[in-house]
Length: 167
Image 1: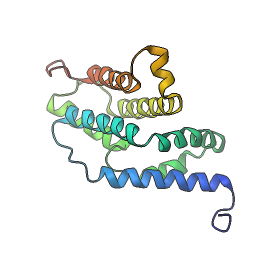
Image 2: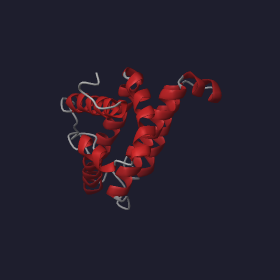
Image 3: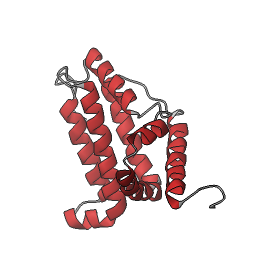
Image 4: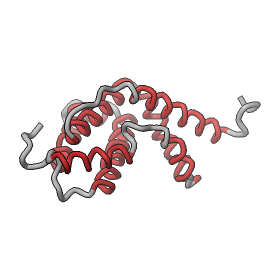
């Protein structure tokens, strides 16, 4: 392994990049249609499905975040993530703008800030639930995925236009 990588940190970076390349490839095949709100809702639901299917990837990313924090390599992470089209911060911000224009998202929502908030909300939940798993269910008395879905629904309802029916 060390013939290809100088140290274990570079192995971790390579694995991180590989995980996001796989997620990006899958996201390119997703049939995302509807108004801006419906597209965001679809993205969030896909994130939940990804959580269910890839907890081991998410556990790795939680551990990777500790390395990332020590190396402070925001530019390197941005380069890795720039290949992701659907689900990127830019895609989310554009979808929010679309939702504002089509009336499905409140007009007072700030697209870039809300995109960053949503991306960090999903990342934080993925990390907590991937690491703690069933302990979350035991702690709160509800299945982990039920809690996860309710957090997502609450966030989405907060940006939804009042003229749209609640999900």
